[in-house]
Image (cartoon, rainbow, N blue to C red):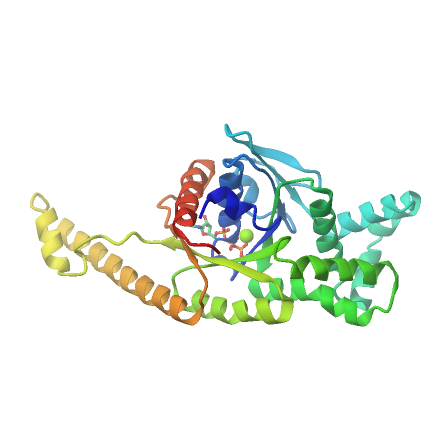
Length: 319
Ligand SMILES: Nc1ncnc2c1ncn2[C@@H]1O[C@H](COP(=O)(O)OP(=O)(O)OP(=O)(O)O)[C@@H](O)[C@H]1O
Ligand SMILES: [Mg+2]
């Protein structure tokens, strides 16, 4: 499928998955890929943005104000910002003529009190802001770096929870708008990320159905992150492969090479088994991303990862 067509299917892509599987890395790679298709992309992080600034070579954390982080030669760009419930509330109050009280209300921690009384209000404030950005057409594509899965399901179901609880008023209409946005595949889609390992795959399969059933959101392809490239012939006979490759090595070096080859073979087998299981149990297209052999991932690694993502998208049929 064409990369740009892929990126233009929904105006919001929520990147979700178990903690540590590479959501932020995938969000960064995806945003660069879309920018390289000429699109203006906004990456939205919650809290402090985690590893996101470093992936764009930015030293400081992101803030509520959008910051330009990437310009593509193709004319596209990536901007990034953090949306917190406090900031979103402050902006909402200011926009509704409550400028004088707004700052004091937020700085006195009143939101914490309200959030205890009305569960889901924090999420509605953030998603309401995302919805406003999408409605205003501020970006061609908004990529939301979601919290880890359990939280992500709660994050996205909070709107329908509030819709049931609130009888009227601005809160209810905000919740209704958010639910409508989540249910519309042209506006919003979830991209699930996993590693080719047992626990992340189990969690992904379980939560995929929860996203569909409880949130009612469309699931895009599954990103299988950090896949080892299969080394041809390694599976046949590790010892023979090591022998052939190590004529000039001493016995100690051969031993180390043999252990490395055996580790790699074990990893390849685990990976293939888990990918097979994922394909059998979850009928979604799959985008595989390579394992990056680098101590730290930064802009120099995100470039090739975004290209790998593009190539994986080129290979899938209609989503
Ligand atoms: N393809 C990859 N190859 C190698 N390492 C990777 C790859 N993708 C991510 N990582 C590394 O894995 C770690 C977790 O990645 P990342 O921060 O993107 O995950 P996350 O799902 O956003 O985590 P969290 O749930 O904490 O937000 C980081 O150290 C990152 O550099
Ligand atoms: Mg993250």
